[in-house]
Length: 157
Image 1 (cartoon, helix red, strand yellow):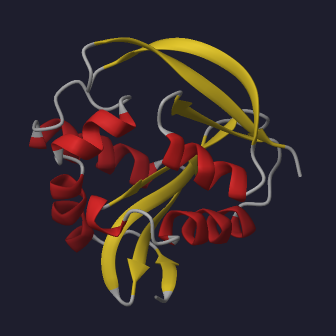
Image 2: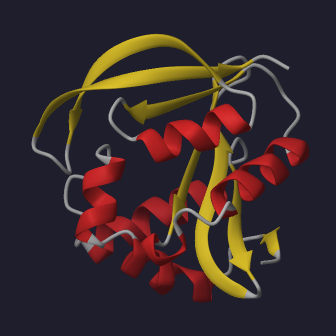
């Protein structure tokens, strides 16, 4: 499967909205929007991050199909990565390939990531890209309606 990144197009947003409303994906990601079904809030969020100078946002394509998004954002020395892959594409190496490509495009280090402690798949993606667990935290997970354990991971080089 050929994985590539490109800038986010307006036509990607309805696809992202659908992907980000899959119940199983929401539960796994845990730290999501308060109301993922609120299309106005979703559109406002994407408008803001697409206009932000400190955000590098990319659409993930697999064999030409839009399968998710990946981004790095934040102030220098506090940059953080995030990604979302359509559940039907989980376990195929797409997130790892996309994150590697993004990290090559955004060489600033250190870069951080946060993941629900029980999200083994996402942790594996991050570790394959060189991130290491450097801390533990607890946070309120909107998708689960409770505070849960999370891991903080760091990529130094």
